[in-house]
Image (cartoon, rainbow, N blue to C red; front, side, top):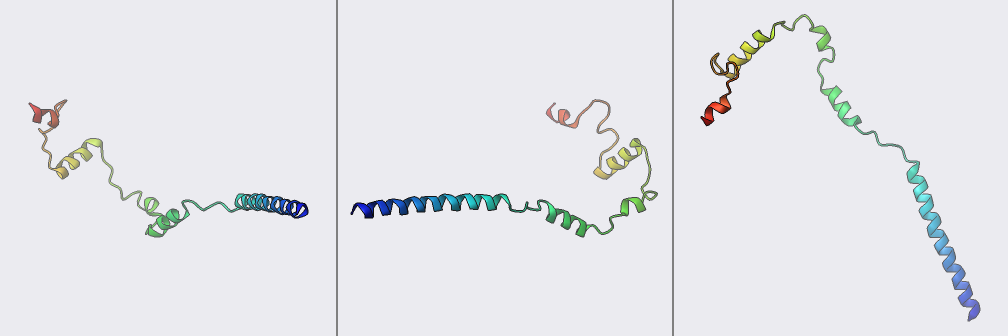
Amino acid sequence: MVVAKAHLGTIYKGIDMTKIMMIFLAMLLVGCANDARLGHSVALVKTEQTYNPNATQENLLEVPDGTGERMQTGYDRYVGRGENDLSGSSSQILEDFN
């Protein structure tokens, strides 16, 4: 009976050592894994959805030039703002509270 208990103790130590070795090998294999290609799919979709990647270089002379005042006037017409709506330091938000 004593011999059987000693033999079982050796078996349990062997199982514990096997578990430790399996955990160590699993950690070793995880450390050797390739890195994920993060952002690759987004970059691929972006390039596939671009109709003409050279459009900015091809249309350099097509962009109208203008001063900030001309652009602001065009923007004011677009949003429907008159000339007297915002002048100087006045604000539409503060006018509504008065």
